[in-house]
Amino acid sequence: MNLQVIDSKTFSHKDYTSIILPKAEYSYCTFTNCNFENSDVSNNVFLECEFNDCNFSNVNVKHTTFNDVIFNSCKLVGLNFKNCNDFLLAFGFKNCNLNLSSFAEMTINKTQFTNCKMNQVDFSQAQAKSCLFQKCDLKNSIFDSTNLQDSNFSTAFNFIINPTSNNIKNATFSKENIVGLLKPFGIRIM
Image (cartoon, rainbow, N blue to C red; front, side, top):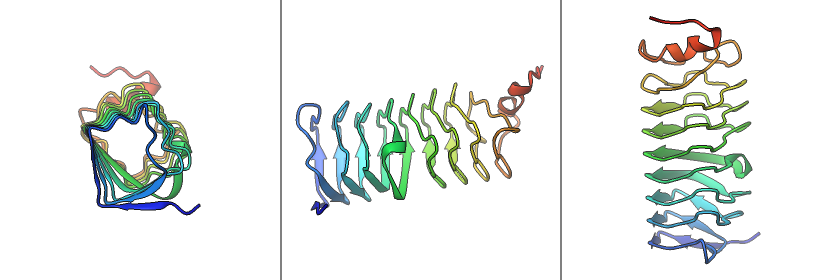
């Protein structure tokens, strides 16, 4: 599929709930205060783009390419990232709400999550090596057969990770949040 190339354009205060974002390859574009909720951005390509204060909740991202994309202060509730194109997949999240989203069975190595609300996020069977979970609330998030090798949870909180069913080799935790590793064993810490 030959996509139109849209380069270095700024999109501001657009509502894509009633109009569809044109299928294209967006390079070095910035989207600010745009509403994509429940819309379809499938088969689009985003290269080195930035999304600021956007609502991306429940968006269809089937076959969508995210390469070096940053989401800042965005709402991404209920997003199934597993459906997006995994070729050259690279993104980061700062001050975002990712509740109820899924990275299950994906390779998201080196992804940075900073100050994100990530309640009930599914990381089952994901390759999440060398990820940063800085000041992230991981309440009720699912880690099952997840490779978290070398990941940093030192400032994350509310997580429960069973060390016997996940690879946490060389992962970093703090003394304050170590209880999240012991909870699966029914150990009480006083």
